[in-house]
Length: 142
Length: 243
Image (tube, rainbow over all chains, first blue to last red; front, side):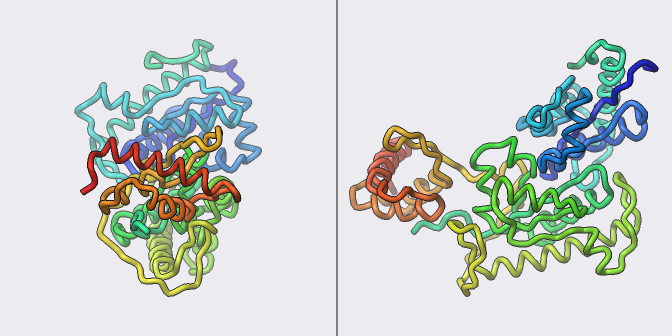
């Protein structure tokens, strides 16, 4: 990854109505703070809604991975509307369907299943980040 | 006039993931929605004003809304005003924290003690504003509070999920133009439940009710009334005979 100059932008869902939104945020934090802090940057949806120039510029100049908590896919839609490129998009529900034993509960604080699901999701996003950085455009779950 | 959705207050938090104060807005909004005022509040995801449909964008016109922001950029307040309607009230966590002498919130994923204190203070302030707004009259046509002492009917309802808060809308064709009308499905449903059959006499009531939530162009009232009558008749046919 040494020759990859761009950051991979991570844009999670900002929903507060369901545990899936919380899972998306936890996964985004895990990637940007723990797993790939040097290669990634978190951009909040609220700034894109407002049309914040710095955020739009970052999104326009770097590939983005969006993590959506529901089928409305606000994160993916907002990145596109902000002039960005969604290199990979992932939905928490799709991951949950593959890990049915990790049922997320709780919004303010996730249960153990939710935390584990967030970790699994974060690892999949990390694979995507590495794939983008290596010029492969993505991971196995695209 | 039919009683449309019971009066509630909309909460829109910035949810800003890059700041601990954003986490404060999220947790404070949740505390109000789930614990402090679950029957009186509803929320929507801020991005839905752009990523959603007309019903989502009608949110702040339909509900008096409190915007909860983490910082002075005021994404929730400004975004709501730009795409939906002017919030009836607004809170900025950094300002509230300074006013109350609370320490700086830290920890986006897990708030420190000051952050938790900020959540309590913010939630308390939101709840107070909810109470204030519920005792004022929200004019949905103007999208503003009116200083009237109007009695409010309340019924306990579960807090609505953030992605299900959009106001139902329906497209109709008037003079060859497709027009999206806010709340029309609810108006039809409630007239039907009130046992009012489709008839020429109902056209005026239909138009008056629709006009509360939607602007009707001058001179087109008759055309709208005719289409609304026709659409309501079709709705009644689908639903079966009125009760």
